[in-house]
Image (cartoon, rainbow, N blue to C red):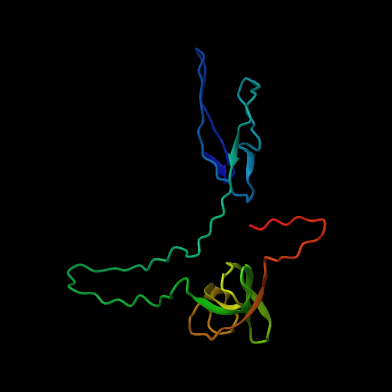
Length: 209
């Protein structure tokens, strides 16, 4: 029987009265901590009988791997409905329901100007969201490698479809939460520079890949 959520008690009327007799107990345990590792199954074990015997119990352990699990949408609360007998039709107002997991995808295009031939470029995009007081909140950063071009002169390189996912639960506009009805303000910053260079220090070796 369970004494509480962490304690069980096992009672036997008699065991091994006329011959050797064994008994085994099987139970399930639930890991409620947040860290992985080897965990003892029993915090403590106490034993008593009418004859005052002493029993030594093993100390079993289990290996726990804590995976990261996210449940963004909880199970919906059911609405109880009753349909009486001999009714051909029933009209019931079950109330309101909200849309779940709303958001949008922001897609950016940017042109990197005057890229020299034979030089790869790295591009960083930093996106923040701005609230009504001008405070910025991070919303993502991407680093993109642009391949070198082989045109004889410098060229502008158009980078298309840089995508950021913007769930509505991060909305800081101050409007109604979890709705696509609010105007949201963002700032995008860009950093770009060449990867490849023909400069070499006298005592260094640079490998291009």
